[in-house]
Image (cartoon, rainbow, N blue to C red; front, top):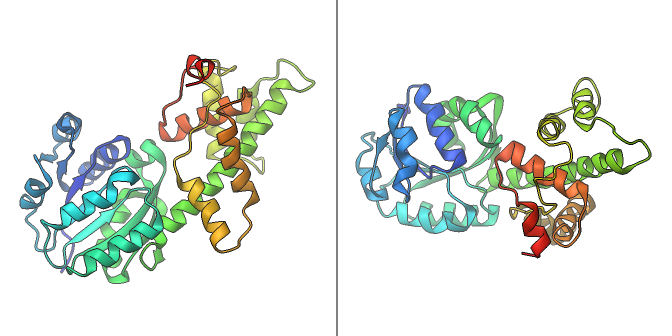
Length: 310
């Protein structure tokens, strides 16, 4: 049996909406569902088929082996996967593209397997831009199911941006470590930018320096590039409070380091610095908050939020 480019898609936030638009352009037939129905408008206008519930979505999938990709916040993913399972049959496939804890992913794999439903955990990186134009995807689960859906993942990913990581849970585990590394890199960039801004040489062009570093230096890369873009918009970052959120995966990396007695000092420091940002005023925290907004569309807080202590 070959995969026939038909799938259901649940969760049309910043990532899910763009993944669907990308797949529609690749010739997929996509049935979409979102709890807030208004969020389906853009994808439906582009050719997606709307549904009113998970049950309705599944009923509109006409392939013998139904495939549903779920892209929801981590804290509601498990309950929604289990609800979806009520409407699926043996050998149907759930692709979990959330930022779920890898331990929960293993539990979901085992729970669905009891009913003959297949499950893949797909860690997705690249932010909304990558979702629209090609993600970096790391997939865990049974090899035969990955091979069956390889055409889908290849179409959803950028060139050389797909990797089968192995056993169930490993896709989300690799994505977790990716995000822990991201924490450390952003912390270092933020500290460096503050050294530039508040060190002995005044009036340095921070955006220009980031552009320079992104051409041939050993620290060139996406985060440096995005830091430059953000600084071009507002060189002092006065519109962004020095309050840095964390999405959970940095915490899980530190917890995993403790569990397996693996030292992760840079990740730990970066996580604790994010906590510290909520009570101190530092330019580096503005810079890190800005970078999160640039690459992932994560919301920032206006300055008055920090000033009020909320």
